[in-house]
Image 1 (spheres, rainbow, N blue to C red):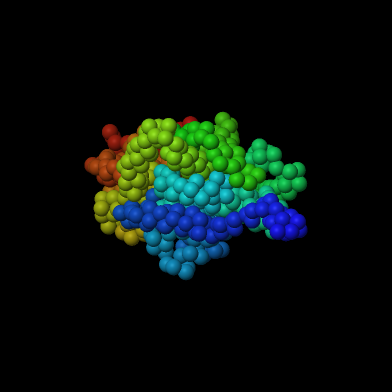
Image 2 (image 1 turned 120 degrees about the vertical axis):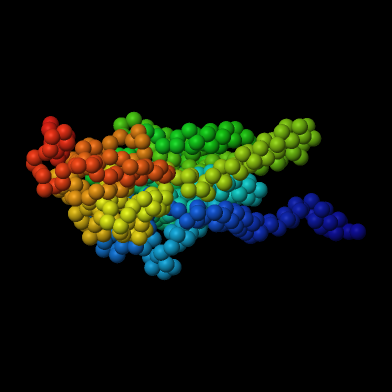
Length: 524
């Protein structure tokens, strides 16, 4: 062999090996997307009808979405402006697919399925295929996700939009293409227009970028995008501030213990080592979105109670990512012989958690899983009432619950109603003056009253006081039916009670008409 041939052979031997062709992420992405979507749809369709019942907020959605677009807009000027976009979307859905109970809830099932796929892709991009798949499968099993995937409200849609906006953020950081940031900003803005508190996720995203020490250009681009989102939300926020009475029912944090339990478990999972892929770490993304929105809402609640667990439903995105990454870490530990015992304990713990979720999953699909049951209220009114009876709502907000099924009250006379909800562009309708309500009540011998549960605070407005005082002075309780969220009481006229024609006099020993003293209604 000549010297040149030897040199050529040596060069071939010393040359670095050709790197193996990188495996296409296509199959992994398909599994990470499809499996969570199928699981979410299966869980969402399981018991979706809840025995053909709906609760109060769903009844509001059902009624408003069936109104014309102009009526929705005019109603939003008085009340529920924060949900006006959602009602408009559902109006279109009802127009295309009919206005049944399944149509009311299926958009939430599909939205939560979209959120699950985004969670899987986030896990795939930040920690690998197995972590992404596990996170995507954990997400639809979480109790809050199961609950609001079957509810005719906007929270599942908001969760899906925040999830995909978060994915757009993660993708935008390394590529820095303007159109990616435009997708991120528009998706976040749409989420905020569906529900204003989605803007708290924007704060979590900012903290993630700061902790991740992204380049200043990226941070500057995000700041401009975030400012655009806030500017787009500002008109809605300013107009809806005048409707603060909509959240006056919140007396303190609603379902905070359950939320904290799941959140703490998720944050503890952040202690497990996680594989890092790309410029952003999974912990840096997941922990802020779990902690910050809830913390900011709780802080605001020191001034005015605002915390409700569904307002920060998208926090479950971070919880699922942390749980999925922790499970991936435990799977990798199983490959080590030294950790066989601890891995077995971890597997047993996971099985125990899944077993504990079964009763929760079953209970979430019952009518009792919601704070009230508008369908049961209407059914009880129909059962207890007789044709020609008077009907009274104490307070008037119960009127909007029963409005979804008008047949329940068609044969009864609404004694306090001056203008119905549709023509008045309101939720509860417009009621008569207090004195007129009392006079109409005295024209009836039987009144069916829909009241709050025992122990609930009584409204202080004159109409409600007139209803209560007239019942106390001129009627006696004949029977009460208790349903989830309300009491239906039948009142009958006292024997020998004077009619309206006897006003203003009264017979000896009998109470006269109610009259006002010191701003309160009393018996005469």
